[in-house]
Structure formats: structure tokens, C-alpha cells
Image 1 (tube, rainbow, N blue to C red):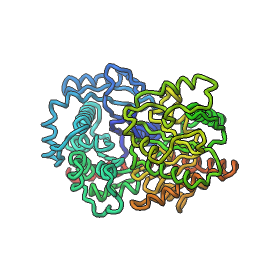
Image 2: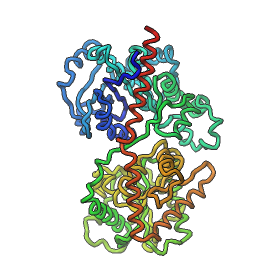
Image 3: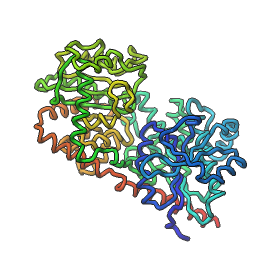
Image 4: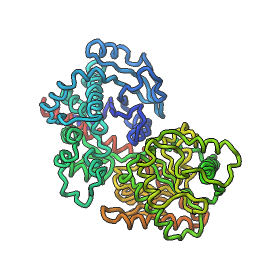
Length: 556
């Protein structure tokens, strides 16, 4: 028996393949080139076909790719697949599956899932059906491809990402047991829900039962498929040590491998253009702020920012705002101008026409625009948590306030109507980035900030923060390029004070000291490139393959 077989085919399945939503898209799209090169396997990503009749800029269709198989899959199994390439570095093969035909079979699929795997779909709601039908269809497409194109001597890995693809992994393993299955949870559904509902995850961690909490929080179906997949696949992985503890407690299986999230640095400007790009970004940010505030703040302004998904508590947005309040009330910034950005997509209505008009003028005067807290109008101006918190804290962005907070509540994709720049095009212009998350299995936002040589504050409840501490062998300080703030369920005010102190410290540093710290931030990020981390994915695949072949050998 050969227990060191390497995979000939790797199928990586996710709702975010050619579908840019969040962090998993970043994981998969940045790893593809390195994974393709290092594995030596035929790498195929499988995602949902959500762009029927519309152009998907991320997908380059190739109708000739596996054309005969597609005809067979359609005629024999009713499976509709579009083949092509993901428009990212490495241009990996992509199968986009149309999962609508699985809906009429939903009840029978759920019934079989209960009989075979004890997956409880009785309490499903929201996006559960959509995710499950995609997951099942993706697996059946791979099953069809396997039977038509793959030799019994080939070694195949099926890698399912998140609970949304778990059902398919279970069915595929049932129908084709020689396929090695890997399941990665990037964040447990029940852990995220506990935090999102304002409960203390860490103080009572050892007392939580995943099944009980799923029932209490109406998460039974998502938790069920995630737990059963974690327990039944050949290799179970997660992205950080802190989430591994969460999996052990709530899913009742300890991950076999920690598949740490890396990144590729191809999105960074070349060294020859880095400083000019940074200056341009700062000018853009300050121009918008000055036109909104009616001020003339210059290049010496300290630009501090946070961003990410609009999870007010989980992402530490509340803590960031409290740190700014403490900084203002303590009044120890030596009169320095501090511009704090909150780059969080909200329920945006439209870009402000009055701000657009003022941006088109060279001289806008010294009168602030009405409501100088936000660049865009929202549908829920009176209920938005950021705006409500700013108002309750007394942030009004008056002309003489030396700390001003600007809410940027839209996706920065270059089409926001105000900045006209992408998120990365503006990120490089920041002085400090603050992401003091309460719940963060990994944390791409602080990693990306460090990659742009923006000194970054994160927390030790984030996988990235713990990783930085492990790299340094101690608690990271801002002088290292990344500051890791200690967070618990009970030290909210202390953590806010610590963050406030980091901003105050930055203001007092010389330009030479700031530049040295910026270089250190970039060096830390370079340690997280995929060329250093892809080995964990290869380890997971080898683990799954070995386990599968041992089973096959024992049963033969």
C-alpha cells in the first residue's frame, strides 16, 4: 500500500469562487497560483453560476474545455456546467455550476442527508437552501467528471470551504469513497452567531455546547451540516489556533491541520512607485475630508482607519470609536490633526451630491457641509450604529476639532462616486490601521495593511494577531510594525485605552521613527506569503489521501 500518493486532481469548492464577497475569496484567489505550482495537480475551482446572461469579469469562459463531458453531464445527469478560467494570477480552471435544477429534489436530498449523515435540515431558513443546492450540485458535477474523465489510478482531493459546501462533500464521499475529502471552516457558524448576538464567547468558552447553542440561536441546520461534515471528512482544517479551539469545543472535532491564510503581494505597487502612490492616496483622502469639513488640513495630518465587514462588535468598530473618544477627552495629542476613517460598507443610498459638487471646485471655502460625518447618504441615517455612536459620543467634526471621524459607508471599488479609488488605492495612504477584533478567525485586513507598510493594531483574539506574537516570540508592540492588543470579555475599556495610547504614541514619533516602523510592518507581512503557508494545504491533502487509501486498503 502506497500511503504517500500525491493528488492528481484537486477540486476546491466554495460559494466565493469567481464571486467576490469576503475573506474566503481572498484566500482562494491569492493562493491559486502557488497551489497550482506547488501541488503539481490539475487544480479545478468549483463555484456557483450566478451570472447567467451577464458578464462576469472574474470568469473567462472556454466552451471547448471538457466540452464532451459537459454534454454528457447535461444529457445524462441534468447538470449544467460552464467551464473556463478564473481571471486571477495562475488562471486556474473553473467549473461554474447551475444549481437551480436541484431545487425540485430538495426534500429528497435533505431526507437522504438525514438518513446517511444525520444532517438536520428541518430548521433551515435564509440562505441554507441556496447554499445546500449549490453544494449538492457541485458534488454531483465532480462525481460526473470523475466517472467520465478520471482513472481509478488517479488520486483525487475534494476540498470544501465553509458550511455552505459541506453537504456536497458528504454526498461525494458516500458515492465515491476513494475521493479524499477535506473540509475547512474559516469561522464556525455557531461561534460567529454567539458573538454576533452579544454573548461572551471566551469567558464561558468551556461551558458552551454547540448543539445547545445552535438550538437557542436558531442555527440548528447550519450547525448540523458543519458539525457532521467536520466529523466525517478525511481531513478537517481551520485557519488559526484560536479557531481550532472553537472547533474542538463547538464541533467536537479537533482540526487535523491548521491551514493558515496567506496572501500574494502582486497587488502592491512596485518599490519605485510606492512613495508616489502613497502621497497620491493621502492627497485624495485629505481632499475629500477637507471639502466635507471646510478645512485645509495638510500632509502632516495623521490618518488612522478601520474597515471590513459591518460587524460592529465582532470587528471591534465599537472599540475603535471608544479609543477615539478617550483620545479626544484626554487631549494629549499636542494639537495634531487626526483624521479617523471608518471604511465599512453600510446600507448606502447614494453619494452626497453636495460633496460631489464641492469636489468639482478648486476652492470650497471654510464652511463645513451639513452632517459632516459621512461621505454618502444612507437609507437608515437615524438607525445606523456608527452614526448613532458618533453622535452619542459628541463627534460633530466642527472646524476647530483636531480629531475628526469620517464614515465611508460604501464598497471602495473605484465606483463609489466620491473617492473614485479602490480600497487598496486608499489603504496605502494611511498612517495607522486599527482592527481590534473581538471575533476574527484570521484577519486579512490587518495583514493587508501591514503589507502596504501601514503599521497596524490588531488583537490577540484574531488569528493574525496570535500569529504575529508567535513569529516574534512575545507580545507585539507598535514599534514592531504590528501592535497586538490584549482583549478579553471583560477588559473593553482597558483595550480602548491601549489603542488610544498607540495613536498618541504615533503622533509623538519622529518621521524617521515612523518610517522605520513602516518598514517593519512590511517585513512581517512578507512572512505570510503563500510561498511560506501553502505547505499546510499540501499537508492537509496528504493527510486526507493517506487516510482514504488506508481505508480502501483495509476494505479490499
